[in-house]
Length: 129
Length: 133
Image (spheres, rainbow over the protein chains, first blue to last red):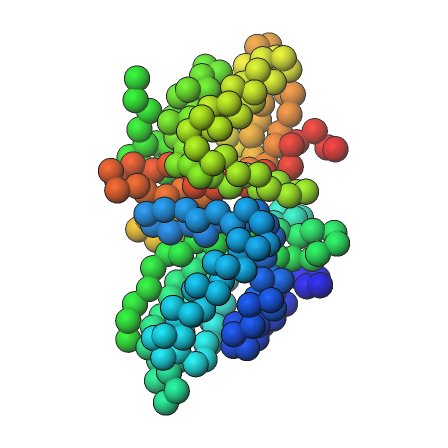
């Protein structure tokens, strides 16, 4: 269980670098939302969410990505139970060349039993390098 | 009548006007469903326009039952996150017709600029209901 929003992103980055769907999924609340510029994807339950993660991870790996890095630009404590982190992802290939920058905001919610997890993701954009 | 918000600031003004009018249909036009409503103990999803309108009809009924007549936004912070995303963080000062305070809920509104250029609600965060409970 992640007890502080400041500890969330190190754990989330490690789960992503393991390409481990179960570990990544453990960082999310359900239902949860992934909000893009042109649409919103709702993951209503854990099963739908895992399927969605499998698809995303498969698509990323197909681009040759083997590693992520994550720069946390700011963590904003909105209230006792909500925080958000504005981050920049970098995605690297097998030669450690950065392929992509992705700009994302994570809305985190604290649950007494589950700790801090993602309630919503805002996919703000990306840039191919 | 169309309720359109060309800026996040206009969104807030339209939201206040529709709330003071207890106009669920006008409020519903400010949503971009599916919309996640996250609160302290969980979240619910307003999947489509019909669900949004039904939920808002219930909300305005509760406002009427409590005698809430005026919605003033205080401690407002508007963050532009990108060209297409913005957030409004605020504390509502909800008052009755005699200007007596009733409730002061804290909320955050995640807005997205749609392809028509207007800003709508993609997610709502209800930090507290402002009753102290």
